[in-house]
Length: 152
Image 1 (cartoon, rainbow, N blue to C red):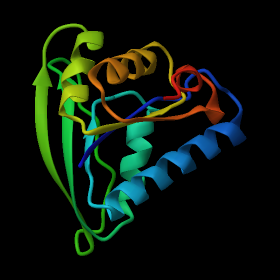
Image 2: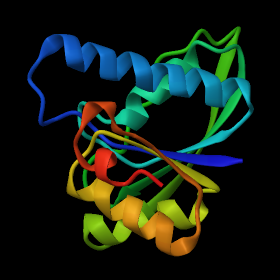
Image 3: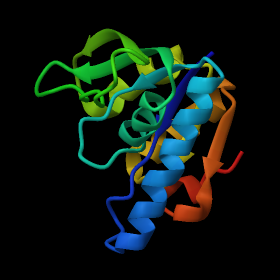
């Protein structure tokens, strides 16, 4: 199963809330890695949910598949450091062209399920599109943002 984790907490300055958000995202990553899910990621910002989910996955021994979707300009999401004797990421890169909003659709099309946590306009777009495409979506609304309105 391929899971797309989207969201951020860029709209909250509270350090304790940010720390809790990062921890919840890491726990999502641990659970998905243990279940053997492939991760679909695409953000290159400094505080995205997918980055923290991969940090959680990196703590789980084994090989984890990651498909990174990113725009042709700039850097793709960096993977967290792993202990090469216990954990490895097998990565495929999908370079996309066009506006960021349009680039979210190939990520969603490749996903079997979506996790929405926090977020703003981009997370809302994924939430609405997931519903339209019949993709199972889990909206974690305790961090407010777009996910609180997309509970399906």
